[in-house]
Image (cartoon, rainbow, N blue to C red; front, side):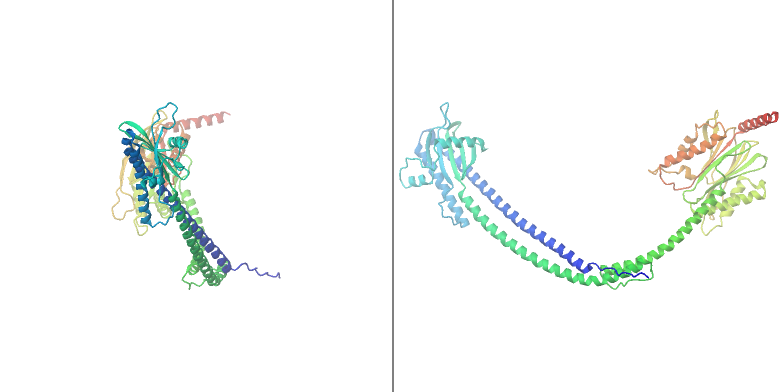
Length: 593
């Protein structure tokens, strides 16, 4: 006996769970820490950029508010060459700017040792009058140092180095031309600040040009201080975030270890029980005492075992039922007339019956009687399936039993009454059936008929061996088998003309639906028949096949919801005469031979 090798144990599920959970927790914590640090850095950068932009916009706005009023104030004295008044206006503008800046520093308690100054210099030039002039003649200037000297009563005659000379003003003029413009005020960025320029206008006349240099030194110092504070705060927050992440990671790993140990044992037990169930032992059950997912899984295993057991039994029953259904279908199809064409004197008959499921409630039959007569019955039991097939077989048996007693009893009305009597007491509930019975008299061409709720049949006349106009046999009545009401059968007779085609069908033909749910209908049925050639007996079979094909094409793959049955019967005495003549001639030729 071969030795059974024990299965090698793999990595315990508890270890896998601890490793997997630790990895997930580490990844989650690391990702959260990285996103937190990134968010802090991005937020800090955004705050610095926003503060820089706000400060630059504020300086630009205030500078524009300064340069325009100064230009307007200097226009009048400049127009009459009062340079001393222009200088006073420039000095006052710088003095006011310094005072405003000192107030702002006091409000924010700024501790900056540099002298408070924002406007570095102001220059006034005259307009260009020469052809090749770049800038006009220099008039005067002012800067914080010059303003302080003049205020102290000291005369200042030389332009300091901080005030641009003519060459620098020419360069600045080019930059202002390429810079931004707001109304009459132009501005451009230069190293350490911004330069503004605006024309000095009195009325409509340009008296000169005002130049102003503004420094951003204090703004940059404030930004450096803000950056240092923001970076320190960000570093502190990142450190705290990292510590919290490490603590969370440690707790997560500890919880994963505890949970892995707790889950390993019941999972192992559940696995062993599942292997037994997999080996086919459906009688075993696993414990369901846990109140977590493992308890739910154990309950699911037990339910699965029960369902598998039931499913196996159902499969056996289903296989047996399918076999019985196939036998029932074969028996029902054997009870129907063959699909080949049959003739009884001048009468030619062919039919088609297709149940919607394995068995159906539609049926039809015919019997050849004496003196050239023929009985035709078409029935439709309620619904389709086994119960309908049994009712159909019962009705057909009633017709066969009646025909075996006495042919004189085979009148359409008597046939329908026999069917009603046979199915009226079947089962505990009403089982309804519509039916149409007819007796063809080939000698006289008279059609005797009776209708019990069946669709109205057609009689289509033959016009030159082509089917022409269709007329309806409008005879109705109550369905058979209803215990609550007395049976009411409508009967009548009709004289057939040579070549007439009798068409009888169940509601499954006209109620054949396409995928859109639209029904085939009586109109399409008549149109499918009218205009078709019917020169001989084989043409009747082709017409039957054409109608079947038309119904299938209209259905376009949609499942038929009801059985489909129709019968074509032609009264053709001329065709019978031609057939007899042909047979006589063939016999004569064989005799002569």
